[in-house]
Every structure is written in structure tokens, then in C-alpha cells.
Image (cartoon, rainbow, N blue to C red; front, side, top):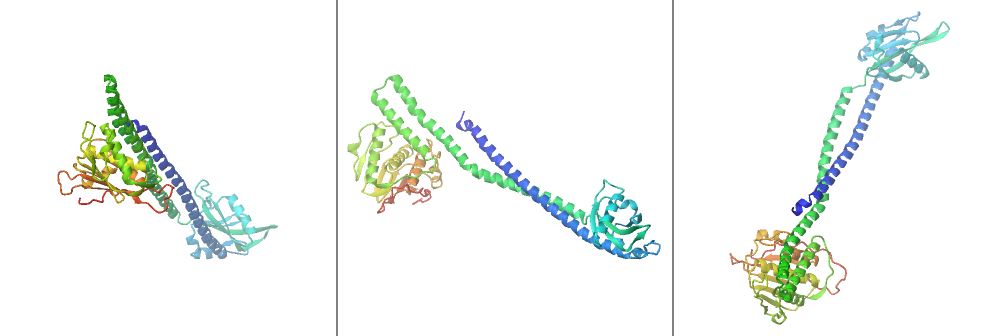
Length: 466
């Protein structure tokens, strides 16, 4: 089972977190929009009701002023019937303490008797002011509610049989533009639904961006497991063969040293998976590079190379049986002081030499000049279009797992050094080679002991002669 499949539960958890975040955000957005829609509809309905009440007050006052009574207290509707005021009111009527004197279109269209009696009482207490109320028609008590206005009939009101008799003009109609309110409600609901979908989509995108570091970390973990399994398989198998054959101790020790070096590279690879800062100091770059080259030759060749490595123009030639040694190493240095971390510089040299030996061809030239480290080989090189890609962990132009240049990139960035790739011999079409240059920062007068900020991204596009 592959590492990716083993991590499927983790990927599913990340996916669930993303979808849960999306759903929670969408639900919260829908709830907020629902409250806003309800508030907007309430305000609209209230304003429409207020406009209807205002219109009904005017109609009721007009109707009350048009009514006249004779000496016998009989209701004269002639002026009302001749006026256009009654034509704009769907339901109206004239009510006294004793009866409904007149109703249009009929008495069943007016409110119930109990509601009318209460309206009479309210009109008396209002002292000539028009009162408004809501009630259904008497014929349909469970039907829609209408708005009503009741105005006191000023020409009617006298003592009859020892009691005061008064009357009111009642006008009623449904809320104005109820159809418009329904359309508004439908429009707001559709808009709220659309905004909820848009918010859910944006939340899903934002959640994806938020979990992207976790996904990258998971992918880096998977890649590291693959690399570790691949790199450790061969030396462990070799150790087993040596143990079974009871090989000489020096061979076993050499293989153990190789395994230790490989483990250190894997640990450095794991460290380079995340952001890091290091403390730099003034170091002799030529001495650190020379020490790293000698250590590499001894580790690969299994012998002492100290006497064969010089400073200017000397060669660390090892064409023996060491695994992966393809050509001599030509070391050329000049004294130079830079701001760097000696351990990371050694790791840079080790990985560049291993990369040149594995993918390139001799001779391999290691040079230190004016604050820069150059490692050049004469192999097939790397096409210009692929140079940025090979700096990513897990990318390789051939065999292996693609960790070497990724570690070099991280180590250079951690020291705020510049890294560039270019062909060694641009004119050679078949074997242009590859030259990797790491240019370190010069030493300031006062070297800070505090960790520096992360270095700039490596410019793999700075090609010379490409």
C-alpha cells in the first residue's frame, strides 16, 4: 500500500473540515439574510399599512361630512351617492348605536357587530378624531383582514329616549399594493438564496486556501516517506548481505558511515520541508568548502584524501571503487570571508557533489571565488525549462528522488544566499553540463547574532548562455 493511500483518512478529514466550514458559513449567511429579509418585509408591510390607514382616514372623513339627517333623524344618502368619494372605497357604511343604517356592498361586508360597537365607543373617546382598526368582514371571520377607519358623523348625535345616540362613517379596504408586497417577498427570497450560494462558493474557495498549508504539509510528509523508504532500502539491504557473508569489518563500517550520512541528509530534507531561519557568522568559505570536499571524497572512496586535496588547482582524484564516483574532483579556492552557516555550507557542497556524480560527468570543478561557490560538471545538464522544477522536492531529471537540489535551495535560502543554475558549456549541444552557483552575503562590520530573515526565492531563471 502506497503512502498516499495510507494518508487517505487524513485527506478525507481535511476535505471534511473544508466542507464543514463551507456549510457552517453558508448556514450563517442564510440565517443573517433571513433576518434581513424578514425585517425588510415587516418594514414594507408596516409602511403599506400606514399608507392605507392614511387614505382611509381621508375617505371616512369625507363620507362623514357628506351624510345629512332630517328632523326625524332619518339618514339622507343623496349627497353620498352623488359624490365620487364613495366610488374609491370598496366597503363603507354608516352605523348608529341602534343599527347599521347603510352598507355598501352589504352589511355582511362590514365587520361584526361587536367590532362596530367597539369602533363607536372609540370614536366617542377620540373627540372627533378618526380611529383606525383591522378586522375581517362579518361574512368571513376567518378570511383576510381589512384595514378600517371610523369617523364621527358630526350632524348626527342627539338625545333619544333619554340616551345619547351617535353615528360613524366606516370605510375599509385591504392593504394597498398587496401584490407588490408579494413580489417584493419573492424577489428578496430569490436574492437571498442566490447570495447564499455565492457566499457558499466563496467560503469553499477560502476554506480551500486555508487548508492548503495542511495539504502541502501532508504531501511533503508523503514525499519524505517515499524518499526515506527509497534511500534506506539499498544500504540496509547491503548491510544485510555483508552480515550474511561475514564481510571484513572495514566494509561494514564503510556501509554504516554511508547509512549515517544518508540519514543526516534525510533529516536535513525533513528540516527543509518547512520555513527556517539560521544564525550566520563570518566564516572562511574556502576552508569550509575544502573540508567538505575532503569529507565527501573520504566517505565515498573509503580512504584518506587529505593529502590529495590542495587549495589552488589541486585535485582530489578518486576513481576507485567508491559507489557513484564518476570522475575526479578539481578543487580551486581563494581566500574569501562570507556570512554563512558552516554546517549548511557543508551540506550544500555534499549535495551538489552527490548530484554531479549521480547525474553529471567529469571532470567536476569546485571553485570558490569572491564570496561565491561554483560546482560544475560536464554531463547532460538540465534544460532551461526544467531548472525551476528540479529545485522542488521530489523533482528529478533522472534516477533518484530529487532531494539534492531541493536541499541546496533550502540551505541557500536559509542563509539569504542567491542560487542560480546555468550550463557549463553552452556551446556543447549534447553535453552542456550544469554549473550551480551559490553566492553568499558579504560580512558586515557588525555581524548580528540574531537569526536572519528567510532568504529570497531562488532565481532558477537566471541563465547564462542558455
